[in-house]
Length: 404
Ligand code: LLP
Image (cartoon, rainbow, N blue to C red; front, side, top):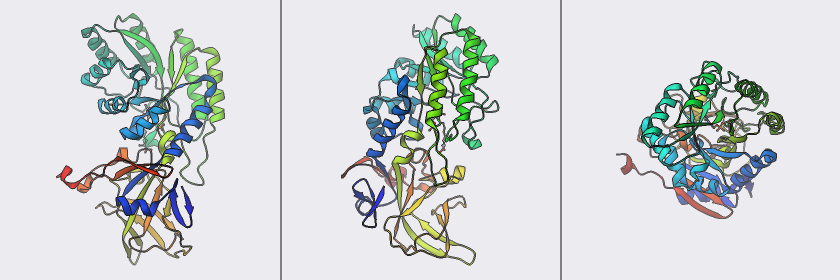
């Protein structure tokens, strides 16, 4: 995204033209950025060519996932719906892993019928259920066991998953118990140890720690896992002050780990693949200047983009047209929803705005549209994919008739 003659452009398309053609709010994705992210991700770990399973939860747009599939990626899914989306996008079932603490019998049965690569189980009861269904279908099912390595990912507590107080995975004692149990089962083939310690991780050290725990546990288990699924979680920079994850250090730690374990590595990245490919364009409906505070009221709201309301996340805001006139006031950028958490950011010295101006929220490609809702009976935005000077509508704007 850059300014071309003062007009913010995504690849070769001006944001103002997009808004004129499709209305606002609108999610726009850049194909070029997607390609760059995937190629960087692969480059970072090329010495051991991992299986990269895109975390569908981060962006569930089937047409976008079709593009991701074309780069050879598989999928990490956490529900029957996500599994259906991945299959619809043409992802090879042999590149799909199924995670999650509460898979229902229906979901397990469907995954078994589709012959996916792995079901990463998270409890004894789930393994029993997989076994029961596999037996009834006269099949042997490849599973992983998700270990909770009790590692602090040093990220927001709401998106931390690898500490002992989190609901995810099983502790060391249970892991050994389930390993023993699975080895004896006629309908289960234990192939994988999986971990995922959290999301938006910017420090490589928690990954190093996690690998040490996994290394120790595998040595103790004396079991050969065909796959080690290290999950996702690689963070991106949302602001100037965010540090960058040191992929080189993470790569070195994995290579060291692989010297002792000849397993295929699986990753489940979401945010690092699609986070910075997406922008949310919205229009200023009103500007309200109160005694205490000034508000820019946008036509996008927390239902369209939840991260600020849910996690206090701060996303960069840019004007669609640059004027070089700076406002001296402090403005809070809010949506029209009847909740005080319906606010995106507070900015000082932003460009002077008028009603009907367009603004762009950056880095909303991951957990943007996928976390959106119809709260306040607001139809979900349209999604477009930009490739050079071409625009593809990859999901239409919801209509009020769909909702009422
Ligand atoms: N694998 C598992 C098992 C996961 O639970 C997750 C994310 C991922 C992979 C992908 O993680 P990523 O590479 O995207 O960090 N809504 C929050 C993020 C929640 C992440 C949930 N699990 C946000 O907007 O920050």
